[in-house]
Amino acid sequence: MAHDSVAPVSFPVPQENTPVHRRAIFSHSIRGIDSHHALAATDDAAIRVRRRRKTDDDSLRLIDDLVNRPMDPMFSDSRLVHEHRSAVSIWFNRIVVFLICVGVGFAGSLFVQQLQSDPRKQVRQTLIGQLEDRNDTITQLTDDVNALKTQVDDQSKKISGNVKSDTLIQDELVNGTVRVTGPGITMTLADPIAASQSDQSTSTRVGTSSNIRIVTDLDLQQLVSLMFSNGAEAIAINGNRIGAQTSIRKAGGHILIGMTAIESPYTIEAIGDKNVLAEQMGSKKLASLYDSFKKAGIYPQVSTSNSITLEAAVAGDIQYAERNE
Image (cartoon, rainbow, N blue to C red):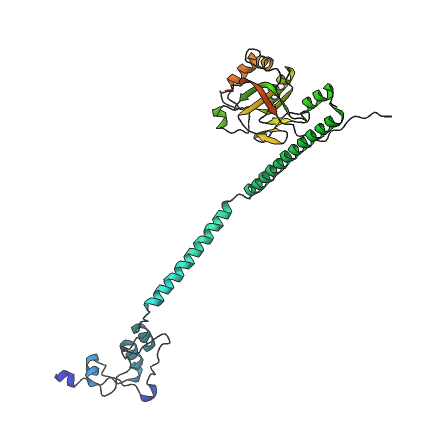
């Protein structure tokens, strides 16, 4: 107690140098703020606890301030006061952040999908749709032409009797310009299963020991030629009549009959003497051809029929030769 009674008074702050306490702009309350300003001269108890220096020297005031009052009042004010947020504000911010994340994720998925999409696929689909529409239009026009030809023939017969000669009838059969019905045969052949599961852009597998292949346009051309040479009067492949202007060719991975694409299995219908055609197109007469088909995994089947109906072929513009005077 004797020691405390003789403790010197701390250096008081002059009135003209008294610091001004200002609030931080981000504080909401001044409650609970501790003061770190210089103590008054009458606060002896606090002064004795701090054990100030005994020497009253102006040169030591700066050191005294740095040692005993190192924290700025403004910083202490901001550190002691905390902002209190309501539950509504917290959940509102969470919902906004969640919606922003969902929007960014959705936009990113669309962007990735756009990068991975093939623009050529849409073009191909458009071209395929246009081709199918055009084929449907050609088929409809062909049916209309055939119906009109039938009406013209009926009216001509009513006026002058049977105006068609045997030569004209035979020419119409060969050209495939009229609808015909009669006995004949049906030959069916299909691609091998192993070849169907592989890439059909090539007719044979190169670099392998297997001879398995698919049916080509050359095979169909050969079979149609054999049928015509053995007396067939009218032929159709998968319902497409073979006429004078009808081609059998390969385009891409499909075989085209005229402008119509066909796929395996291939059905060749021929009108004529069914017994002769069945014999001439059988495995006995065409042993070498059937053997080559068998090695490739193709097995043609021939059946006879008493009545086969074939529609007319698609007719194009026909130009006739004229005498040069």
